[in-house]
Amino acid sequence: MKKGLVTACAVAALAALATSSFGAGISDGVVKIGVLTDMSGVYSTLGGKGTQVGVEMAVKDFGGKVLGKPIVVIGADHQNKADIASAKAREWFDNEKVDMITGLLNSGCALAVQKVAGEKKRITMNTGAASTDLTNSACTPYSVHYVYDTYALGKVTAEAVVPNGGNTWFFLTADYAFGHSLEANTTKFVTKLGGKVLGSVRHPLATSDFSSYLLQAQASGAKIIGLANAGGDTTNAIKQAREFGIDKKGQKLVGLLIFDTDIKSLGLKVAQGMQFTSGFYWDRDKASRDFSKRFYAIHKAMPTMDQAGAYSATMNYLKAIKAAGTDDPDAVMAKLKSMDVSDFFAVHGKIRADGRMVHDMYLMEVKKPAESKGEWDLLKIVKTVPANQAFMPLAESTCSQVKK
Image (cartoon, rainbow, N blue to C red; front, side, top):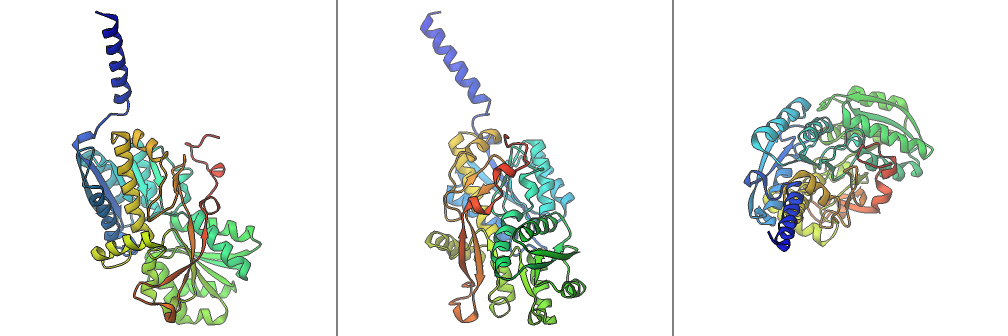
């Protein structure tokens, strides 16, 4: 055999070996995305079907195919139960050949699914859960935490409230991973800013009667009642607090995770003046408005940050597959962590080694009824907090993927 031919064969063999290490092409001839979220419970309005709509819009906008192969979206309701979530994820990975799971609204469910996904070497792009454990003790090489977390929510909100007189706090906390993490992170920043936490009380998920918890908060004498919960729990607590006249007795309720849909449910008359932290607002700029109007045409509601984040996460996942030339999870994650995430959702976002997608966060304020010019004209951005000031520094991460 001639020397030139030998060399050519060797080069081809090495190229094939390098390509095969990342499994070039699309496995099973299809890219399958699973939307696993709360479709029927306390968080279904802020996530639910709207999250799946966001994912389906991204797939359609991408062209319905990647690397010449079809993209399929399936959805399921985890019912806010970690065992159901992990069982569904396992079924999807083993039988349905799902390549990526997104949504994952509910930290208990997200932590359970992320563990299964790490074992199976499949990607999760969490847009709905908030616990910082997702990018610390429970991180995997295949996990992405996309929209917000309890560190950013607690930090930005505390920095807005404590210096303006809100220096004593009492927490109403959802009694599971999310609430515990949100209370702990917010407490850290309240005390760091010179404030004091006078106590807390924990309530079950999907609580309908907050009277006993609100009475304990009222008896504490704290200036701020911090709501370390979300969705229906938050709106129920606020409505019942108003009925008790708590706000008229000098105490102020502060929601630590609020969505546009919550404000819509409460109404501007009840919610006006309330400040909270968000990772997205539909009316931020032209790009966010253009997307949101298209979303509204399908879902008949403006997108929450979870729903908008699901579109962005899916679109960037598909871009990473295209750039990698394969849906192999290791190759795709490498591309995702090298990409600049710039779209209607985030500007110059970056997925770090711990899986945290860092981007600007926003301090929001609910408009007065007289300021609103339409059904969804609910909020105004008071302050933009840069990514490096909003999220936990990588140096503080306990994720096993972070090199110290």
